[in-house]
Length: 149
Image (cartoon, rainbow, N blue to C red):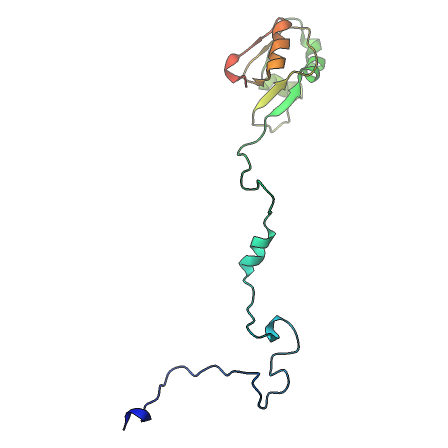
């Protein structure tokens, strides 16, 4: 045996279709479409998932956490007027009792300064705006200072 008699027993080469011969006009590829073209490659499924992601500016920079539930002094004054025989302590529990907070609310609550109040209120454990603080103190109330923002 000589060197030119040796041959590989390895993988058989893939048949190259579409080069003439007895395969007909479309060479087993069908008529049209991605699979009939030369160099066709099926797009991976992950590419379709990437294309569905939002491409708006700031999508990745969304702030963590939720906004506080906010309401105005005018909303509060109408609900608390019947209870105003002494200084009222305003906190989350009282807000739930007078149906100002949704039942399952767990986040922060902020009091805003739109409207007027004419009775004393002591605010505890709530965030409060500067305008609301000024109006409450003007009416004779006070604000727990550690939660003001």
